[in-house]
Image 1: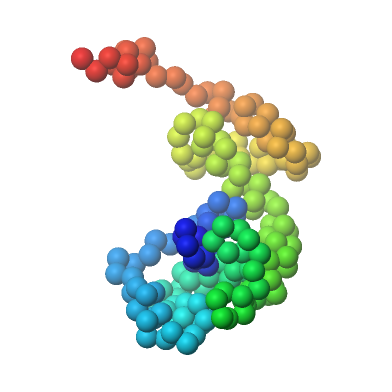
Image 2 (image 1 turned 135 degrees about the vertical axis):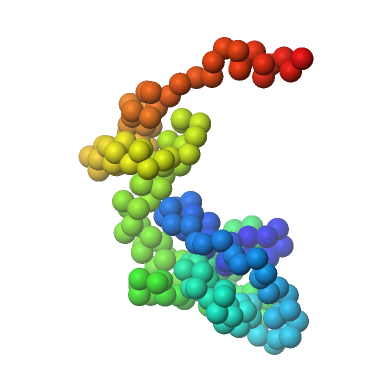
Length: 189
C-alpha cells in the first residue's frame, strides 16, 4: 500500500511475487493514471474506480491476476488496521481468482492461499536460496530446489528449510571472491 491509502494492485502483486512466486508481467510503458478515473468518477467507490480503470484491454490481462487478491485484503487500511468502510463506501472484499476460486473477504482468501503450500514452499525456498548464495536462482538449480522441497514435505518447519538450503549443492559449491577482488573492493586506490 501507499502511506496514506491502500493499493489492491500493489497488494495483489506482492502476494503473487513474494508468496506464490508468480509475478505478473511488467506494466505497459504508458499506463493511464488512476487519478484521471477518480476525478471523472468521484461518486464511485475506490473498487468501482479501479474496475473502470482496468477495463482498458492493455491493463486487464495483468490486473485480472492481481486485483482480486488485493481486494480481498481491503478490510485492512494502509497501516493494517481493520475497517468496514473506505470513507463513505462499504468495503467489498470479495473476489475470484483466475483459477475460478471465489472468496468473500480476507479469511476465505487466506484459506485459498494456504492450499497452495507447495507453491509457497517453492517461492520461499527460491528466495532464501537466492539470499544464501548471493545470486539469482537459475534453471540448473531446479534439482536443488526440488530436493529442498522434498525435505519440507517431510517436515515443514522453517529450521528444516534453512538446513536443507545449507546442505544444498548450490550453497555448498558457492565460491567466494578471489583475494585480489576483495582487496580491490576495500582499497579503491
